[in-house]
Image 1: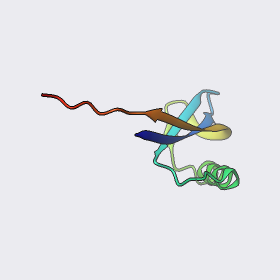
Image 2: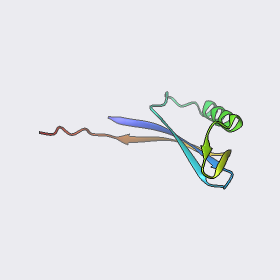
Image 3: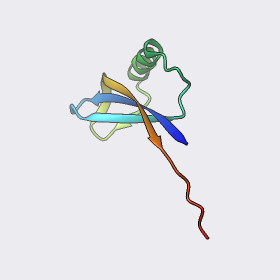
Length: 73
């Protein structure tokens, strides 16, 4: 099974990267919608980091990992 996660990367006031992870994003991922949501998060100032407010978008990634469940006896 492949598990996917959308990673949103922001810069805070200290210049450090802050990551927000969204599990099982709706696919296909709409890049324009992701950018708009990131702008809204920054504008609304809804998340706090140890380095201050989120001030800019750094990037976004769609991560995929393959998971194999093991049957234990």
